[in-house]
Length: 130
Length: 135
Image 1 (cartoon, each protein chain N blue to C red):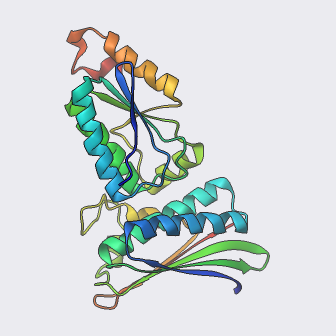
Image 2 (image 1 turned 180 degrees about the horizontal axis):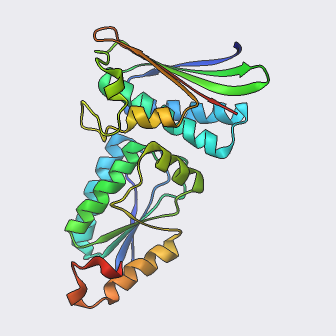
């Protein structure tokens, strides 16, 4: 079965979604990612969707789930590289991915995760700086 | 409204078929000359409707047609299943409504992504959804 590769990038994990997602691939990605977060103590997950021509409610839900699960494992998810036409379509579809942080590209996404690491411990649970 | 000969009939029986429908709708949308945003909208609508048909209708047939109306060109998609049908179409179109495990955005969301959208369904009679996007 196909698997989506997960790369370690400093204290973050980088997932580049390049293929048309289907159910089994999405489930496998969730499992692989959670195992890797725990194994590597990653503090952030970057999901690059710049190759995706569409994001439907199925993929939107998957991104939402990954963000929620990662959060429980103390890692922050940032979805990067969304195409403009995809953003327009998602909002019209009624899916604004409110549980997911976004950045324009991998570099800015990494910056968001780095900033989170620099925050003092006491700021935890208080998302004011996010 | 006259239909040009280009017409694809595709069976939707698995998640992989949903991917194939999406790819074919994209190819036809490009051929018709839809803008990038309109292509993205109709491909996304096709993905929602094909998946709905698979999850709730037990699979069915998707038809992709390149259509013209005067000098307007567009793409018309038909999704037909022999499933249990929809008892209350108005309710099914409401955001947040789902009879399954989904987000309940499929039908209402797909409708917003199309210029024309009709549902023909009744309990025990299956469901037929037509959606079109014009240039």
